[in-house]
Image (cartoon, rainbow, N blue to C red):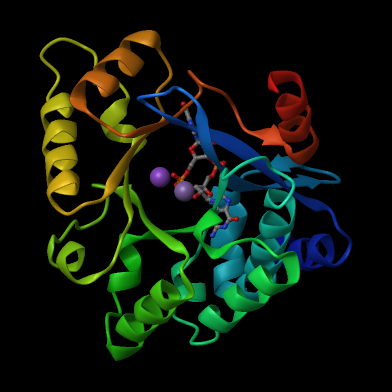
Length: 251
Ligand code: G
Ligand code: G
Ligand code: MN
Ligand code: NA
């Protein structure tokens, strides 16, 4: 309750911010995009993880204004990035179930003047828990707007393959739990990653391996054919200012 009150206040008083973690092409090793990650510095408790406060926002309905703020801020920040570098935004299943989501996405794109193909929405398997006509309609409308869709945390949910057939994802994000330790000999994770990559390729989807921390993991993931990599091995999340600074110094 107290945290809900504090979060409401944080949202109203600009106490939240976004950080951006690089997503790198395994072929070129260049940054192709950044994932926006929400951060909250609580005045008393210090940094609180979104893994803690996002569920509170979902229960209290605060996720609607919070998610809108994230989307609008990420689109605005991304317009300052060079070339065709994309921004990926996490969308809560509660936001996804709101029929107003496509209109909000259009509004955020129009206000920021960000091209639709530079915005990628990350959606988890749990949006399919209340799978209905509304879910299908939202997918179709988002696709028509021209934004990209990524299936986040793949492999951690109940992983039915039915929705891969039905939903128009551009990318599968392989969960960190498969990447971590995949380079250890005899570990089964590399076989699973390999299977996900071939499934994605057959469906014309990209793959991002998440959470690569070591050079061994990086080498293995590239060998297994993941098209993109995101993890501490390439960089931790940066502030919006640091993204711009990095761009200036890397040309
Ligand atoms: O960045 P970090 O590892 O602390 O994120 C923890 C969890 O919070 C992850 O599951 C991530 O997807 C989620 N998360 C981070 N930022 C956002 C956001 O802006 N919106 C939503 N819905 N979830 C987020
Ligand atoms: O659920 P989602 O995939 O959106 O969560 C992404 C989270 O994973 C972010 O909070 C980010 O901080 C975290 N993350 C990204 N790369 C790494 C990594 O290499 N190691 C660890 N431990 N966490 C990572
Ligand atoms: Mn994500
Ligand atoms: Na993920």
